[in-house]
Length: 300
Image 1: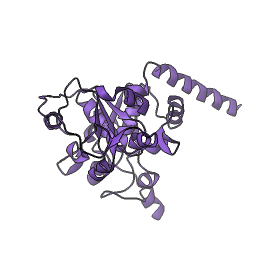
Image 2 (image 1 turned 45 degrees about the vertical axis):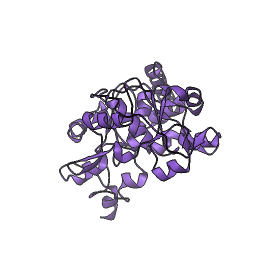
Image 3 (image 1 turned 120 degrees about the vertical axis):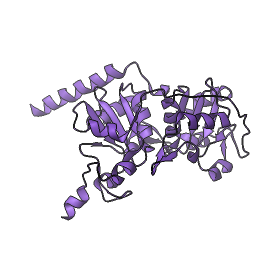
Image 4 (image 1 turned 90 degrees about the vertical axis):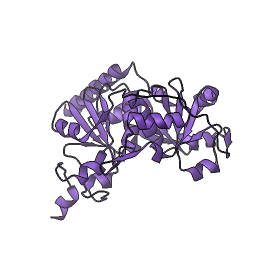
């Protein structure tokens, strides 16, 4: 009887997810290589990999924008989102206008492309997408590439604002801890969550979080990591209590990996999703914020 009840419960949760998110689609945030190949003349492709990889080979026509250009440090916290003024200057530099459709990519398992897209979306530029599978998939399919730097027009005069409410700050997250309507999603590796891998002044995790490594959102197809199907993602997320009837606040170490998770949730139609870009590096370095550290508990 317990087994039957469990199956019925899981089925009801899955049906809730499907009906809640039926209006959305991952294609609202992620595009595949076939789409990009057909539309490449009408979009601006942005390669956010390190420059040596760019010069070894990149999608023909792609601009190379280094991550340092769209990540800023404020009050000692690194990798924060740029202000509207800072992002406007960057877009002006590369000739990106309000009408420009941007497709960003990196390696297949490099989430900096999603961080760039999340940044654009937050500042109101809706025409921004991640290339699923990145350059690895593009190259694996032997599509057009180049080694020479792409020239670009500057001075677009684009002035962005704050658009979608898809960002959380530390104070906001603190106020939501323990609230049953909010799920905090820790997207880091198991070792980071457990406190055995310490990358800040303190190790461990935020109390009450749901832990699911962001890499679980991907699967390998023909040797390349790509997004799982919507059905696979919905089932996986439901198993961790990450459901669309809750507010979801995602974080990692510096808000990079969690930006990928945030875009996935938005693509699945989750209505209330935020990326905490200060993430663990800010939270753990401030002794006033609560943490749990299983590694310390086990050692005592």
